[in-house]
Image (cartoon, rainbow, N blue to C red):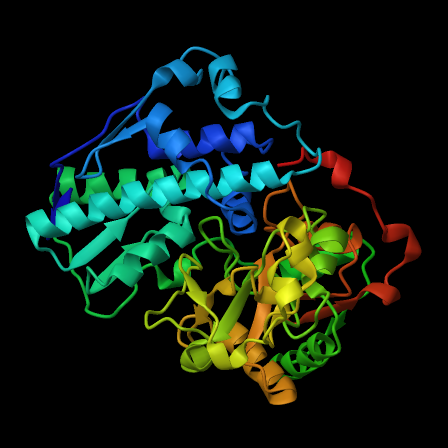
Length: 447
């Protein structure tokens, strides 16, 4: 579609059941992950494998034309007629049944993940190259679930086809509500649309609820929590010290994020310089697979010192190579490791956020959009000479991101988080009543 002022004209479309999202979800299902939430895992698993099955996929599952239009071979998929994504023919094609959830991941599984990621990237690149050629437009907007594939988005960036690329931070089904509201406002009501150059009208996507001091104190007292109220700068200084010392911090500040990424308001934060931090966060706090990478949140003004990307990435929707001078050379033996053996290699000065392909899915933090988070990272930088933090969503696997102080405290007491911050209130794990500790992993289905 092409947008002009307050109108959108749809020029081309590919209709259900032919869908890149459903193709990717079929492989998510086949690899033993949960559809509509496990797609991130396929993307995160792909760098551990080699794309050995791209020809198999293109010769049997999807017909791709030069302009990027495509058609799926529905003989291999059951999502139109059944409650599962793939069928026996799909199993025969890959020589195995779908992986059982929580079973061991094999090198073949990793190679399959790498293959579908590469095929989807190929289709997307063909589409955007063709629309650039046909319409000569300098700006590209992306939305939908596939637009959350930050690896594919970054491949578009590297082609340098467009002056600006905007990816809606609440892509996918959740963002449909926003689209419906805007379509009524602009298309039906014909309201004027104003655009300010360089201004992000999503305001960092910090559009959810916020809690007053009275709300916070009432909820903490009802939970018999032990807390300390502090002034703004004092709490920033104190938390930065805990992060420098290697403590994991639950951070709840301001309005919650709209979309699937925690962007510094409902986040678990940690020190990216510590070698085992990724493994510890995954296994002891998030209770999820050890291979899953974490994102760095970097002060916008230091982005170019650490990452090889010209564009800003306020919503964690692009990846970047880590700057070469921040990498640590690995030996021949390490280079020849395969699968999850790659996990334990220290590849850079920020090992907790460096994926096995020396990339990171970064968030650039702007002091005008998120001043509190910016101040915290700045203080951590003063103490560590590192202008970024590990940032992951404030929840455990299978659970929604926390919203209320009660949610935050429950996650704090049900994990190995060391510190909890709710606005100006500081809570230390070893100061909490022993009886407040809980085991609540069983309350949520694994994703």
